[in-house]
Length: 295
Image 1 (cartoon, one colour):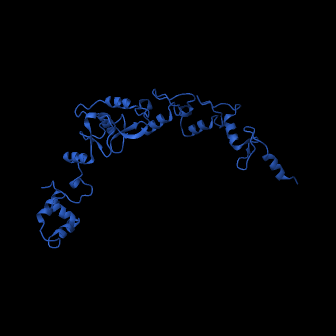
Image 2 (tube, one colour):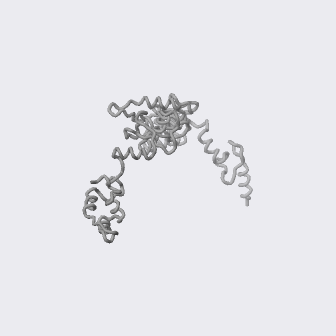
């Protein structure tokens, strides 16, 4: 009986024809002469294999029944035209086709940044992309001033020119720092100095995406709150998300209130139970610490 163990060891000792390395337990020879990883490479790059007939493909035919490479075959299986495959375009040695971008082309003749920007913006052509990481202060201000002002309000709305954050404010990248709000950038540029800490870029127009320099000013949180309240935009009264009262209920509470030395002598506890609030909320309404704007 032949020694099969010795035969297997002899076969395992054969080196790979591609890389010259001996096979390993997890990477054995396949196809007789190549270890598994080199076998796949050799299969795709064998110069003796006929080329795929798809235009601009050039890959070897791997699916003999269809006469196509594996990628074009998968494309046809999904019901698509293999000639329309974007990865058949060669980006080797090319730079991004966006005229101001000098990065290496990697995706559809665009660099990775421009391609990712297009995906994030629903397939918009990055040739029209306005966002750049290497813009100077002068570039950003020139772009801001190129936004046509609204003929009625005078606002320069940055929507569609700059990115807009979740709060509706325009943001961009300044000196490599992403997510900088343009309002603060414009105020600092107008003042000729960085904005002070704990201050806000306040809008006289109350339009968050507006970047018109004359509509922006530096204010403290207290000044910003007073400006908000003076314009009637504060979340007070029934506009507050947690409010359980309304002007009619407030008037009724004040009309029915019976004074007393404590909440048991008065009807504060009764009113609180009726309207589903705490006794302190009833006291605040009566003494006009809250709902002071309701007569």
